[in-house]
Length: 339
Image 1: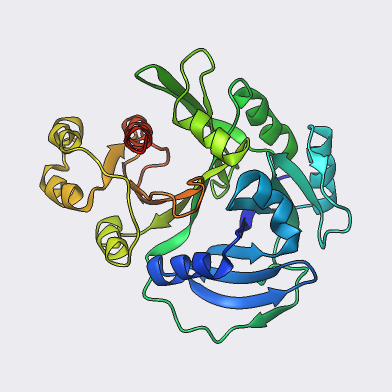
Image 2: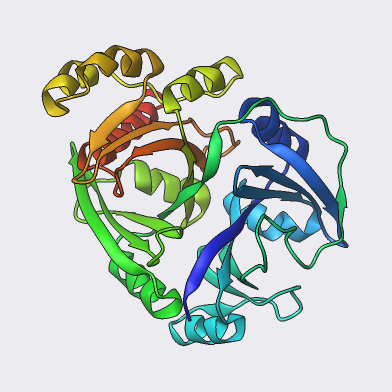
């Protein structure tokens, strides 16, 4: 049965307050509610249509020991929850704990998909199955995020096509695009899967096992296997957003000056904006539908696993081949500089 949306992403962490502070004070999320269950404490954060749940406690310890801070649950809304669960299990997923408050399946590494019915009416609901209470937390600074654009998943080499097939069979997500990037002696392969509405997108990436070890191998090592590599948030005006986020303490991956020197030749029609893009360290690309602007954070988490992206779409529907390469090169430079 068809998947209709991403309800929320749940992050597990050893330091809940620090992560909540990062999202509220630096990234402009607002804490809406909190819940205390028998084995964890959770905070619900919201900005635009993006919802995050940040959880800590004994119930998160197995995941944290194996993977460190990261996304443990990407909750999906479905037309028919029971049928979606059956299809996912038939496609190879392992059913999650039957004692969980709602049906769920294990997807990759330690990450699961909770399966929820489509909400009635408009607006965001509180994630079901927890005793939420509204919080009186101070309002966050003005945010720039409108929604969660996509989820990037790092998989082990040689498994990419199998997972793309899984998401088609289990949840009806079609292959949208693919890209291969090689930098030096290592390389990345990727497949984008997406639902028909275009509001559920997973970018699946994996190292090329025929090449040397690189940044994706390093992620798999730090993360203890496959996991969510980054969450991408859609912004309406990314250049002022990037400046604002830096002022609040968000660290972004640097982009070399040569990138912007070549940009005018590559993107005819954006010449006047290039100085602004350079100042904000924002990447630019285009596809057949329009332009795409992106900027990527360094990971704020202890094991340097999960990081974040801000993306602005000026008509573009894809990800831009040049930007995919630019991101890969930026992460690789950062990895090598860190030793």
